[in-house]
Length: 244
Image 1: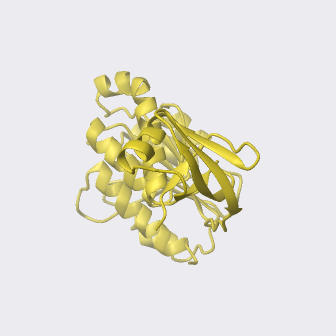
Image 2 (image 1 turned 45 degrees about the vertical axis):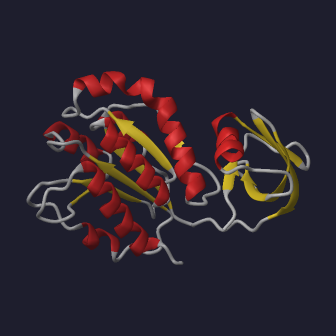
């Protein structure tokens, strides 16, 4: 299977890969003239041939456009800040599972030191999203929004479509299972999933979610780590709403 890379733009029938991606293609994959790769500018996908692999750039000729199949389902993830190794692992897996946009959330029970350092990690997180999107052969990386407080993130994530599903994962004893919210709702063009930090959401955050028309749901009787909940919930959403 051909490797895929993202480029900033196409210049007519040419493109240039720069930065760390060029280093990876040239030094690690040993790209050389004549080899074929797939290139995406986030909108279109092309089969491309290497013309020259230089020290800091790989130059391509675009040969032919490739068919792009995108899911009709878009998913937004509101992900509370947790320890960065776990948070970044969740970013990677959420990308593989098709998330369209991600908002890091400074929840009340997120560690204050992590929240304070989060803005400085944005560049690293963008890189993780891009590399994971390339590996999973997506057309583009998910959009990474700035860090937000829960009430702001919940309000801004509310879409206009009446068929959207807004899901607030909760460990409350009375929360209905996620499955019960998904089975009767096909088709669904957009889903928003809010996942709390270690220690869970506060009552104030729960009230903000309900005020923003989110449905409180549960993944079962066991308490999952944040990154585990990301994978479990996204897999269930895909199973319920993806037609292919």
